[in-house]
Length: 332
Image (cartoon, rainbow, N blue to C red):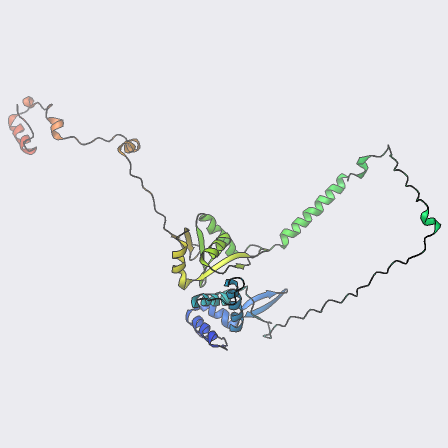
């Protein structure tokens, strides 16, 4: 698919070629037409460029490098993964345009006014007089008023009710100003509660993403960059992600230490390793308790041998019975 991205270097040409070959239709739409973006209480169109991505990739590489290092070696697939994440993530700011198509130029803030520092005046030295050597009058002791009542300073019930009413109004205002939790965050929390003993991997576009404490754990174990996402909360939720085309490799590494639930959608869940039903072999005693006593089949000799009296039967009939039972009857 054709992308409206200007390339200036060979590296940018490689990134663009990868995106044109692997980006989904949704991602192509975002790159070519931009996405809505809110800033300073205004609405803009957020468009991203390869120059902006190169700066983003440099920042990510700097995070991976050890303290004091001057460079870092990053595999191509990691850089391509950064590229998909950079252009897909709506919260990453690129170049902002007004609704009329002009580029947004924020109003420069005026520098704070310089405050002139005034040196305090030194106290004038004067010659001591006779009054300086005179003793200051002693303060009179406090008079203990026997008629003083502590209840005079206690607030009345009306004042208490007024204070409680003000506190309730403040709490109500805080709740009303809070942003609602996004549907994506709610779906992720619901699925994680359904599989509490598993790490939930949620498919979002071209990425599988993990949020919260599990994201921190996998970031340390897999060496993935830990980022964050705004779900309408005051602070960003920790997040890691990896591209779908490399997912099998990451799945293999993760299941060595954890059980996972892979959500392609909220209704399409795959478990790794798969759950197996445990069926224990029942003993004969347990089977008897479950389904009553079990009688073993008895041999025909045990049934008829000693207790079969032929005296009451016709001899011709007995001969036929003997033929049927295969010489099992002993005639007496």
